[in-house]
Each structure stands twice: as C-alpha cells, then as structure tokens.
Length: 360
Ligand code: HEC
Ligand code: HEC
Image 1 (cartoon, rainbow, N blue to C red):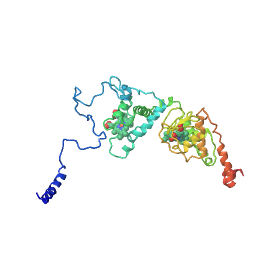
Image 2 (image 1 turned 60 degrees about the horizontal axis):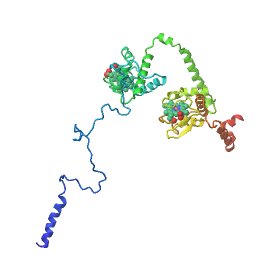
Image 3 (image 1 turned 90 degrees about the horizontal axis):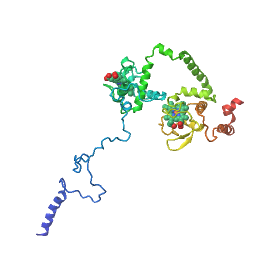
C-alpha cells in the first residue's frame, strides 16, 4: 500500500475507535485506579443471603429486644390503659402544683388555639371562621365523666377531626395537660356551696390586690431616682412582671430555675463554667439574661432592662430573702456604688448629680 492509503485508513478508523466506547454496557468493572475502599464486600438492604436459612441478609432483632429507652411496659403511663385495656380512671403521675402549672403551660401552647383559654371551645381558630370543625367545650357532663386515661388518649392519638399530639407532646406533659383540663373543668363547674367551702374571702383578696396595685403605682415616681429598696417591693415587682410564670420560689423547676436557695449557690452555666450567684450575677441575669445562661434551661428569658435600679435591687433583695445561704466571697457589700458616686462628684460637675442637688 502507498503511504497515502495508510493515512486515509487512519483518518477513517481513528474517529471510529475514539467514539466507539460510548453507549455500550459492559460486565467488567470500570477502570478505577485509586480504590479508596469504594468497592467492598457487603450486602445491600433487602439483598439475598444464602448463609441464613430464611435467605435474608437483613437480620431481625433477637426476639424480645427493646431499643434503649423504648421500654413502654407501663401501660397506664404510656397508653392510659389498664391491663384489661380499659382507660385508667386517674392520672398515673404524682400531682404537684408545678405539674399542673406545666400542664397549663403546655395547654396554652397546644390546645388554646382550638379549645380556648377556658376550654369552652372558642379558640381563635374557631372565631375567625377558618372553616375548621368546631372543637367541643370540655364543660359537658359527658367529658367531665370521662376517665383521665380517655383524655390522655384523645391528646395522644387525636379523635375524629382532632389531630393527634402524641408525636409533639411528651408523655408526662400529656398527663400534665390532662390535669390542667381537669382543673379547668372544676373551675367552670363549681357550685356556690363548693366555693363557700373554700373559706376564702374573695372580697378581701380583691381589696388586698387593689391595695398592692395602688401602692406600686404610688411608688412609681420615686422609682426613677433612688426609690425604696425592699424585699416587700421586690415581691410586688416580681408579681407585676409575672416572674413567677417561669420561676418558682419553692424549689421546683419551671421554665426557669427556682429562686429558692439560688442566691449564694454555685450555678452551672451552659458553657460548662460555673458562677457564684451573688448580687452582681443576679443583676446581670435580670437585665441581660443571655450573658450567662443557666445550664439545662433555654435562653428564653427576655431582658428586664426597663426596670429602674431600685426595682432591680428590690428584686435582688427578694431573691436573697428566699435563700439561707451567703456567697463564699464577701462581695455583697454595696461598695461599688459608693465608689461610683465619689468618682462622679470628682469627675463631673457637682450640680449635675441629682443626689448632690437634693443635699444642697
Ligand atoms: C386544631 C384544633 C385542635 C387542637 C389544637 C386541639 N383540639 Fe381537641 N378537638 C378538636 C376538635 C375539632 C374536636 C372534635 C373532634 C370531633 O368530634 O370530630 C376535639 C375534641 C377534643 C376532645 C373531646 C373528645 C370527645 O370525646 O369528644 C378533647 C377532650 C380534646 N379535644 C382535648 C384536646 C386537648 C387536651 C388538646 C391539646 C393537647 C386539644 N384537644 C387540641 C380540635 C382541636
Ligand atoms: C418566660 C420565662 C421567664 C420569665 C417571665 C422570667 N424568667 Fe428569669 N429565667 C428564665 C430562664 C429560662 C432562665 C435560665 C436561663 C438563663 O440563665 O438565661 C432564667 C434565669 C434567671 C435568673 C438566673 C437564675 C440562675 O439560676 O442562674 C434570674 C436571677 C432570673 N431569671 C430572674 C428573673 C426575674 C427577676 C424575672 C421577672 C422580672 C424573671 N426572671 C422572669 C425564664 C424567665
């Protein structure tokens, strides 16, 4: 052959050779220079495996295996039923005040939108004509007479048009909600006789409350510059600001840590460090709660930095009064404030300080 023929042949075959690898399947594994453990011996999910008698590669757990933390043999607690599958009559959890408050908290989150704050079935969803099936009132004889376990199962599994909340609300919290629903039912169905038996002078309570409010109002102007600092005032301010919605004074943990024996104690913080709960720490916790977050609690407290200094100090005095401890270091003297005013008087013009003005 002539050289030009060879060239012609090459010109025709080369493109064929270069493009011929595309679109073909091959039984052979692709060329894979660096294996990197990409291919290994293994069984894929659902694959056949002759080794086992049932030919399944995926093995069943040994009979009776229970995943850690998933043992739910307490039927009363987890399902609200007795051994014979009837509903338990009573909540199988110890009832405490903070447990019922927890129930209120969770009820307000999950149930109020439909059932309303008092359980009358007039939640915001129902009012605004969104077309939702009406939620019933809890204040019917039928629902008052249902077993506690029944209410628990309604929350856990839903009922007819009501969705299930078992996935979103923990077991204890579901029982806490049941307890609170019971409290709501009693609150809306008390006879005059029952009310009398409580031996509470409602008129006197109302007077006391109004007096407290009036006192607080009267104190307000003084609060701006150096109002009175006292335990009593701290208690009132705590009530007015609903600190008690999240902080107990009896040692029980609510949304936030209890105030009982808080002052002077060693507080573990979220970042793993600890701090002594002295006055400075309490002060910071009130005006800038996110600065040091107590371990095990959400950073959900809003700063109360709109309170005046004397209001904050009164709160601190109140919290101190709930503790029989003292911080180990003697850093509770009000030294710093003296220093500050001394500085102020030397650094700034004397007549700018309101205290100085008064004393002239
Ligand atoms: C999205 C709205 C909605 C929410 C949220 C909701 N419910 Fe309901 N609930 C309903 C409706 C609607 C019904 C009536 C269902 C039906 O009869 O079809 C109902 C029925 C009930 C009943 C009566 C069951 C019966 O025997 O008739 C109870 C008790 C109840 N809910 C408790 C709760 C509790 C406790 C919560 C909070 C954990 C809650 N519900 C949250 C809508 C709601
Ligand atoms: C909405 C709930 C909520 C309210 C209301 C609330 N707090 Fe708190 N508070 C918390 C939580 C949660 C923590 C713990 C997390 C943190 O340290 O920020 C906390 C922490 C504190 C601490 C530090 C406690 C510790 O153990 O370290 C003090 C002091 C405190 N709050 C005072 C107050 C005062 C005073 C008020 C009322 C003026 C108030 N809180 C209102 C939720 C609340």
